[in-house]
Structures are given as C-alpha cells and as structure tokens.
Image (cartoon, rainbow, N blue to C red):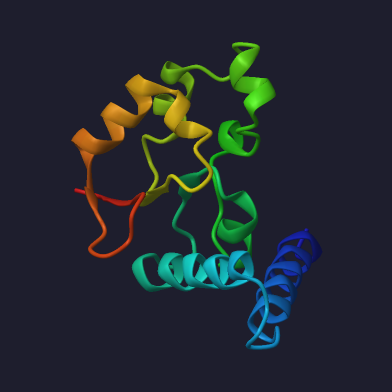
Amino acid sequence: AVLVPLACWGLAWSAARDLESAPAHSDPARKEAIALIELIRAHTEPGDLVAGDAQMQIFAAGRGTPPNLVDTSHARIDAGYLTDEEAIAASENVRMVVFQTGRLERLPRYEEWVRSNFQPVDGAEGAYLRN
C-alpha cells in the first residue's frame, strides 16, 4: 500500500527534474511547462487538489487532480462525457484551477463558475485560487 504513493511521488519528481534540467535554449513550450509547475507549487501545498487541463504539469508539480478531471480531452467534451455540471462537481474541493490548453474553457458554465468562486492569480493568465 505504501509503494503506490511512493512510486507516484518518484514519477512526479523525475518528470519535474527532467523538465527543469533541460538546456536553457530548449523550446518555449518546455519553459512554459516549467513556469506552470513552479506556479502550482508556489500557490498550493502537497495534498491540495488542482483542477485543470494541464494534467502533466499538475502531476509534475506533485499535486493531485480530481478523478473526473484526469481526462479533459476534446473528444470527451465533444462526446458529452464531460459536462459543465460534472466539472463543477469535481472541482468543489480543489485549491486551484488552471486553464492552459483551452479544453476546459469549452465548458462555459464551468468557466463562469470558476471565475465566480476563485480569484485570478496575479500575473498568471488562466490560473485561479479558491476564494
């Protein structure tokens, strides 16, 4: 039972280390990913849940995401398998929400709910902290 959380922590640490040790001349997407990881770590604590459409960065930051928001793909949203109501219910207990890829912004009532229940993070477009 102890091995699963330990393995997950090891994977998150390894992913973050790989991103952070990339050469300075690496592509802009990598720099953006590192900045998001650092933002998540700066505004949340281990054990906090973070909702968003940048699951790899949330994972690399060592934070969890609600199970129903692990897959926020266009296909799932288009098929109606992720609705505004489901996203809102899944986000009830999160500390932070991150709109990074535009996928969750396709759920207009969810985006409106986030803007009503969370505060924007200064200088971080698309990042919101619980009020």
